[in-house]
Length: 223
Image (cartoon, rainbow, N blue to C red; front, side, top):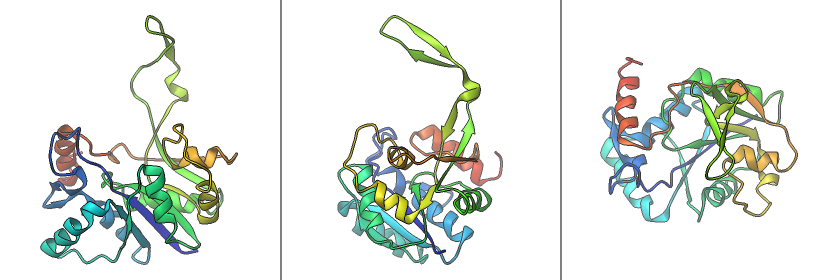
């Protein structure tokens, strides 16, 4: 089946403290978003790449591609009001096969990890990468009280989240809900179980200046 990936890149970089959206910030000699696209091209050179960008960012991105000589084939879709609507816009350009959804600022996933996610959908309708929590966790009961959570039962969710295209399209026919925090939650609301795949601790999402420094170490092979 044809592999497809929707890369959602609508961030405004507010937590980065920068006027430049975080997906365009250079790291290791090129914008973060280019690293993300390259990760999926390394996994499958025939993969169809849909890049979802706000209309106001599209000309800037095209200029970056010219500046950096970036030629990996991809199709641009318009960003929506929310991530939900952005993914839905990307899905409208895909007809069949397997589709993954990826954070544009999560650039360090290995080809092996991405393959695990896509391979899992040969046996399951939905698969997402996760890692164990190493921190102690507490749940707030009210403003005064909290209680410990058994971290052995907690998993931290990453992307790409991968699905049969027909299942994800059907799930996105539902209306938007605030409880939809990722694509797996949209599919799960339809009653479909989500299979967990081993993720990677280096598969970080870049949202702060510290993440950029960690990312440089990852690219240098020091982490």
